[in-house]
Image 1: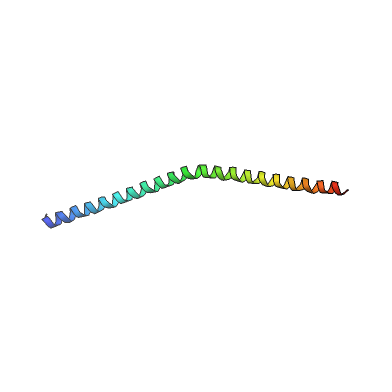
Image 2 (image 1 turned 30 degrees about the horizontal axis):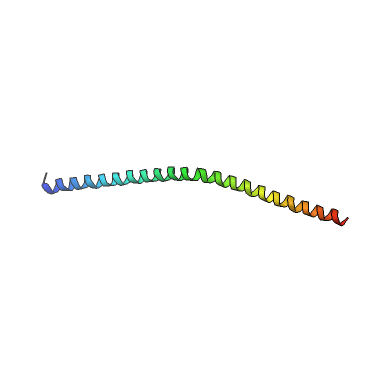
Amino acid sequence: MSVQAMSEKNLRKEIEMKLRERALILIAAVLITLVGFSLISAPAVEMVKVGKEAGYEIITNWLAKADMAHHQTEVRKA
């Protein structure tokens, strides 16, 4: 085997190793991203649910007050 053939073989090994390293880095980055987003989104979803419930309660209270005011004006007119 010539020196050139050995250097080409070593170069191919290095290229293959770099591709493996890149693939592993990519897989690790994807996994870290997925785990990170799931950890971030879980509390956010809960906060959205609580906010939605609070919004419904505020609207219900406002509508009840408006209805009571309407009934009180009817009683006063009579």
